[in-house]
Image 1 (cartoon, rainbow, N blue to C red):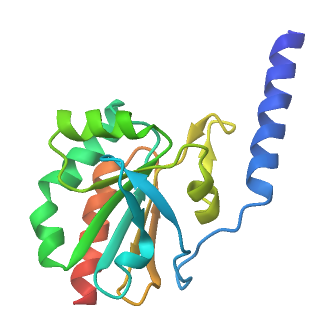
Image 2 (image 1 turned 180 degrees about the vertical axis):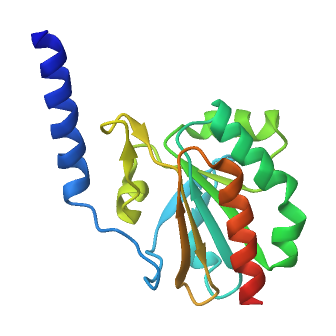
Length: 174
């Protein structure tokens, strides 16, 4: 009984403490500057694409988990439509470069996956956690060519809606 109470209190403390100091990116915000390594070990800087392409940045909990695989493959299946909308797809999670490389190869993902070990960029964006801080959140951001966030979708379970809504917003930009 005491163990359950301790775990519940610790989880709540961890959750509130971890989200308390995060600035949350909102619609209208300018995307923050960041650099991370991609699945090939190359450094990717957001500066290299700002002003050139619309961006769809999606944060996902974990490589190769059922929901994340479904979302990643749906982004893959719609890759040409995103290209037609002059948009780049960028997936970000806390797994290693090696994990991302295996995930991308296994499912033939043709877009960039960035390794955010330590979740610094997740925190920079203010992506919330779920289940008392135990599960990293799933949030998609659509960013126009000027670097302005024009849409945010946050849902742990509606994986296909992340893709469908991002496409609908992008079609409205062009």
